[in-house]
Image (cartoon, rainbow, N blue to C red):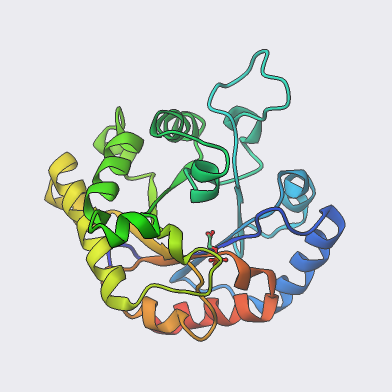
Length: 256
Ligand code: PGA
């Protein structure tokens, strides 16, 4: 356990409109207790950030953007910058597999976004993970190394402290086929090994690394009990406030 707080992040993806997001937060408010050892983050649709930022109690729940463009301002029709998200969110997802694989975002885009988030005082959650094919070809470690080098280029060790890394095997996202604890430990140790190469032993130890991919209220405790796991990134199960708050309670108990 590298950090004092376990991070539990709910990624709602392209679900819930502004109205439903606000109602959901109302219900979640009543279910989530404030625990000193757990940090809860939700990533709603970009459209709901303004409303939720006024509604949310930041001591209880923080907000994340699911995406943004890496330049701060300018002629980029349809885009939203990290600079515009300042004050609305505390975290930003970067390099999620759906961004990489559906929208063809490269390591270069990812790296520019990690830098933009840090430049704007927002903590980037850098997602990395191998596809089923890469896993079958025993390439997991190499893929993670490449994505970390790609995503963290130009990031100093002081800045690294602001970065959260999420190990999300592509084959486990939204498939119900979650990684077994041994897979997660292997991958997260590989991530820490690469951080050690890039930033030294202390950084490797204190880096905040999460697991994500088909986590449910039933499987959460198994991951949270792994010493290398500092939290969870949850998609589908975060859309059910009971499942999500259940996972938060499990995080509180697991890392007491
Ligand atoms: P999932 O999504 O929990 O639905 O697999 C995880 C994610 O995409 O972050």
